[in-house]
Image (cartoon, rainbow, N blue to C red; front, top):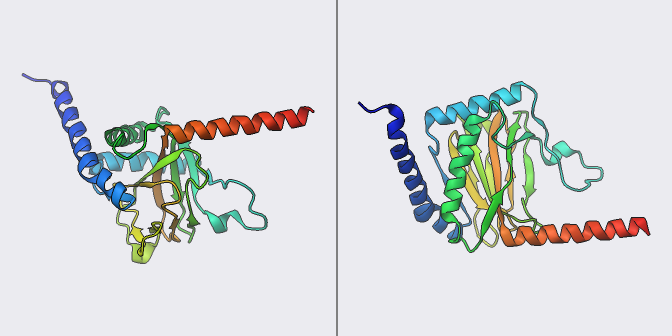
Length: 245
């Protein structure tokens, strides 16, 4: 008689080969051709529901804070630019086990793409858990990585059941550089979206009129990341020299 755990490695192998197939046949060609790609039913209903439950608990416990903006925006209200509430998760925290499972699968998907995208992907950020509270908040058109900070691919996992964009808004609109079209992505439950993080993909989150949850991670290009860190070290050193002289 076989125990359930005896079958686990085979199931795991099946998941890994499905992710590799998805990467090679769909993700890589789409990123190289259009610069973005999304897939539905990424985790499946049960696992997706478990992630949603953990994210809702984070929200209910008051763990989400106003999303920050880089640099000064003199005289402009932060909420007019981005109206989300966020927290950062690395997946080891108690109560984020399902989020960690999601991150593991995205990691496997991206590592299957590595070397085929003209990039060497070395690491990723923590996960940003975000909620737009449904009061008409959005995020104005912006580029995730406008200044070569190393972020290469943006991955967003959506958690919104029964989302109706006509009623609830909340569409992520991508303005692909040099293309005659925009791409509208509805934040549907269990949908994973990937796109280049740099100036190729300015995007906005349109006003949301229902609670809108998403988890975002960024993958780093090793060369650009190393260069960005070197520049930051040089800048810090020269600032320290000036302040001590």
